[in-house]
Image (cartoon, rainbow, N blue to C red; front, side, top):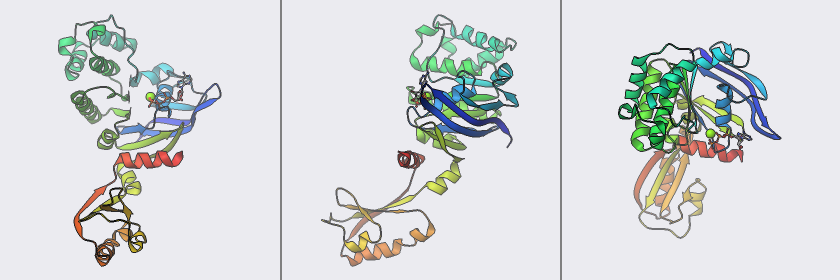
Amino acid sequence: MSTIIQIKNISKVYGKTHVLKDVNLEIKKGEIIALLGPNGAGKTTLISIICGLVNKSAGSVIIDGFDNATNFRKAREKVGLVPQELHLAMFDKVVNTLHYSRGLFGKKRNEKHINELIEKLHLSDKKNQEIRSLSGGMKRRVLIAKALAHQPKILFLDEPTAGVDVELRKSTWNLVKQLRQSGVTIILTTHYIEEAESIADRIGIINKGKLILVDDKKTLMKRLGKKHIQINLANPIEEMPQKLKDLSLELSEDKINLYYHFKDKKEYQNIPLILQTIKDCGLNINELNTSKSSLEDIFVDIVNDEY
Ligand SMILES: Nc1ncnc2c1ncn2[C@@H]1O[C@H](COP(=O)(O)OP(=O)(O)OP(=O)(O)O)[C@@H](O)[C@H]1O
Ligand SMILES: [Mg+2]
């Protein structure tokens, strides 16, 4: 896949605070990349810098061949941005704000495209209403439609599903999938990590202004994911026998479950020995359950390690 955005050595300083520290990232044409990170990590700042809304302190951003500092207009028109904050002209009608937004990028008026967007975002019955009369979730749909009004090749979605109901979250992600199928490159942030896990091709993790990891989702899950086995005992135990401690088992607080975490084949091969040792200790097993770590578990591990 070719590169559509090249971010090199981006830093941002507010006063004495370094909010972005030497961020390097290549975004590939047609991919969905999710940027994850705790509150204040620098996600919105990075997106705002790429879209040219915030000045960088150092570094460069090339969008589809155009430098966003020396060729701002050309670079900006490639990009649609759904901002985290709801900034809208409250007295405008929905349909007018969309036409206006398209016009700002010098694109010809296109009733068909705008009407399609209105339909896709389930805004048909609100089309001629003033924006101030819409609910928060509906305003967010207008923001998404606005970002797409000029048919950009690249779409940034900064927390598009924060504070929206389940239905709208689902339809937003469906729209994102459709857009990707039509060739749009998508960069998104979300605190719903399981949603990022289901939709993204690549995951980037930002913490304290540093991009600490970028990887293909599948590779990341394989590399950092762990499997767990839960051994539910027939009766609670007072203390874990030393023999089981030596096999790296953990005892749950309610003293009825033993846990074993394993990563690779070698550790997996210990399971028969573990089960035999449990038996040898005179304990009876009620049930065995296995599970895999989710992207959320991996995220929490990585971010906590950094503290
Ligand atoms: N205009 C500004 N002036 C000073 N500091 C700022 C400004 N904008 C952002 N910051 C600081 O930069 C840091 C990164 O903020 P940013 O909004 O990029 O975080 P974020 O990762 O998007 O967080 P969230 O998940 O809460 O949206 C924060 O410490 C924030 O306080
Ligand atoms: Mg943010």
